[in-house]
Image (cartoon, rainbow, N blue to C red; front, side, top):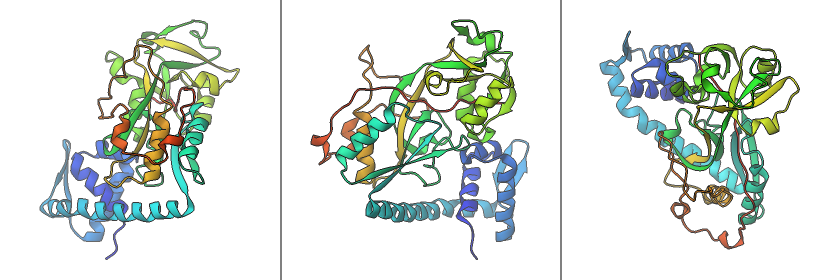
Length: 344
């Protein structure tokens, strides 16, 4: 019997979470799609894996037996896949780097240049993903490393080094009643409809809604966007407003959209991420070093506070020695950004 590893992976996450909604968020898929996958796996195996109730999903005896074996199977498959892809990348001297929206903004070219000095003859293959996947290909194995906006679902399974912090602003239609204000209190936006990313983006979507900073006020979603173009058009058409990194005002200027600072919300953060594995390829380590050498030094001399999700502040000593380090120089620094989100 041949079983798609995608079905096994979905089963493992549901077994771990015990809840379809939370599992769907971790997998970046809709709840109906996840339900369909579980039923498909049960049909293939000819057994019932879960008992379903209003409180969640409980493993049956057969489900518990499978849950005890599946993680090792998936770990072995993932390791084999990484080894094969890494070998192909080394042979071609290509490093696959994912990003969401414009990712690193001004820093992108500088990071690539720093990596090129460490790895002469290597090429960085940048791959942009939609907002359906805030991990920019890391979760699927399509990226070796990624430049990401924190927080997002599934980040606990990745090794993340925080690079910078950046204020959150708000994007508004140019005709909006608040567009003329220099600074907009977040409380003034509580009754506004928001433009959201897909629900499957989970924690990332929640953060760009600032759901923990609303004082219990619910959100109304006026539109859902999967990429920057859809997002800008929805705002320009008056379907809603959206929190966004400050850099968006520089990189996505339109006459029918305005950007304003927002008070009452915490800043966002950008990090470089890679899979959390003991056998990190040397090229990935060098890419992380290239990012860290460009990290701005806060005026206070202190590092940003760590993210509750488990991200760490940069610690170059963890990366081990680099034979190319003597050739690397540190260009001037800048900021990064990613897309904006909200939650229904």
